[in-house]
Image 1 (cartoon, rainbow, N blue to C red):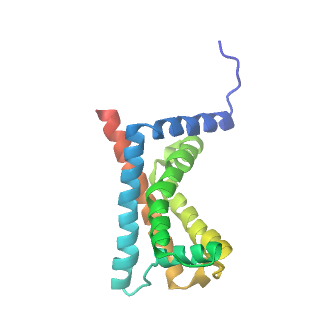
Image 2: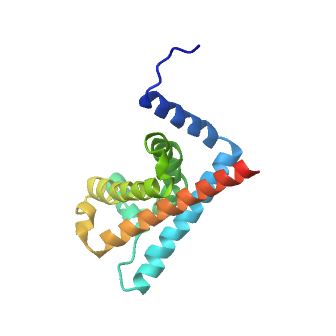
Image 3: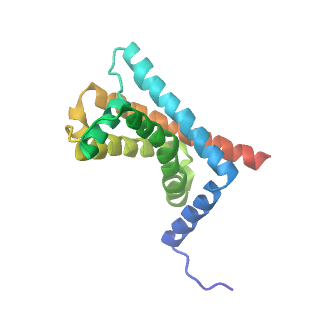
Length: 178
């Protein structure tokens, strides 16, 4: 008999460790790459095509990344900015969903499914991008001054998170069924 007390904290840590172990397998890495690629395409398509076609702001994640690089290193470097944008979209953000946000949501609010936690995660990505990176690191106004680009970025980051989470859920369902 195991007399070890189970608390929400130990359950959360176990869930996160289990998701980290699952991530670093071939199916886990394929899922992360696929989720990141699909979500990045959705983000860029929305922010650089649909939004301007509808009369809203055009997202410019690469120039923003270049601004961060200039602040950190004293000069711009467009290839580095492209890399930073795609690394965030294809690795860092889906990694955050798979090993942080998803296990937290599944442990603390399992009945929410994946869509609501993903939307919340998208808002957190937006805060990270527009407050932490754009403001605290690059020195721009907080949330880029709450202009049109702010709200397009919010929709874009929530869309990103929803697409990434959907791909992860789809891949999980596919593996469980097979």
